[in-house]
Image (cartoon, rainbow, N blue to C red; front, side):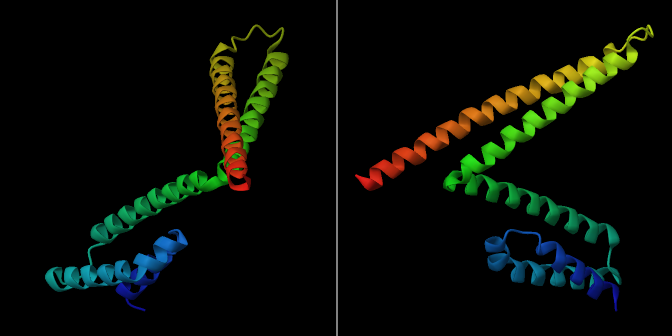
Length: 158
């Protein structure tokens, strides 16, 4: 298998990471553009440029991340917000709880040793605070989404 064929196969797999609607609409033309660019690069430089191919892969991966984030926001706005916010809320609470347990463990282990644990406890307390804030924000957004869905359901029923 030639280097170009291998790169095309890898690029096709990378395109497979895009959300389905995006992939169905654009992957064929993106793959063709990749093949054309690699062919042009080979003709002008006599070989494929690894830096050029790496740049295309990085740029495409950034596009995958961007489209996945956009897809997540879109699905959130389409009514799945309650589930997303519920997951965020419980994950933040779990992180906060585990952090508190870790702080307590460090404090118990350091008790009586005379060690200064401020360097460990202070960032952990900050993480706990941020987790609680994230959980509170997610809970508020979840409740607002529930109210909107109930209101929309009442409008459809009435």
